[in-house]
Image: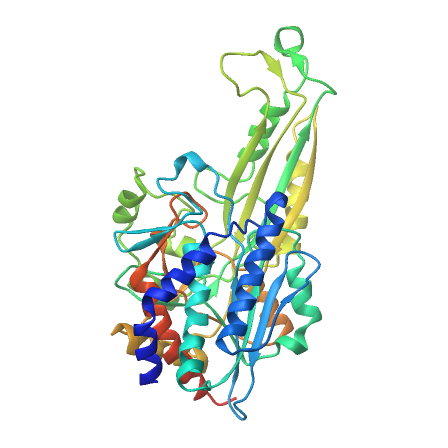
Length: 457
């Protein structure tokens, strides 16, 4: 272990240079024009794994964007850990909001700045650099390791989940280690034991067969954009309650113990509001901000379109309009059931004079691992040794849909050992990742594998 830690310290500058090389690859999986870049990112990762001494390093065809696999299975009697990450990234739009080039990373003020830094290239590379340090100094690993880095987490054809189900034998493991989450704060290391799920929809509203003049037809027909506004308003009341009939039926109520646990780690709500530069926080009445984010479903509108949005004025009644929405889900809720409820809600509340079509785009099941599980406690030990304090065991309001697939197909718990921060601007302009967390993550992973090796399976 000491040799590996010394190696990681000595190679820090080279590790950072390698990461920057990877970050320059524009692996935007949602953009068909950059499919070749996604493949180049996969090949870069596979080549790196082969170079450091992992076995069976290869780019895998999934039917969508390529994934990467490698393994090292020479520790009989020890657990097998699957390291998961994703080499694809979010689109950089809106490009004019960036203060540094999204795909020409820079280092300033203690951060690596660029698209894919926190989500997820720097995070998964902390594992690959840790594996290098162990293999180059010891020639061995403390436990069996498989690596699976996908290329569709941020978009694409959605084939990776089926690939995991179809290749469960190849990916079989005792636990999945995922570094794609955030700490409570820069001084509060955190391990996530639960994630919300998601159900995502596109609603299209169709009116007349062509755009109309509002002077000639105004007051005679239902305006599709007025209908869009009415439909959106039908989903939530002024107190933040979601109005989709049946949506709360399967929600498990928070216990008094859970609410006390959440309160012990929540930042003051006025400080969160000040950081976000909003007058106040808002959400479902009767719950704190952290309770709403970790333990309650939520509803959000992500985009609205239709009509005239150019300079000046144009008195048009648009023929059609639409919007995209999602629901974050909590334990015991099933995305497919929510999809049926949402479709029924739209049908019931669609204003007369237009038709509305609901398309269920994708979903992810909520996941939860018992906080007292042996693998989570082993991870907590590694965090404490590295960062000097016991990590907070927390839930997270976001979703990583593949975690539920791992638990369903591999029957293995997902251990969420991320090194990001909430202020890393993932999915937004000026994404960044703390350099100290990059180096600390590498050191922590070295201890993580050693701690996992002691878990009895």
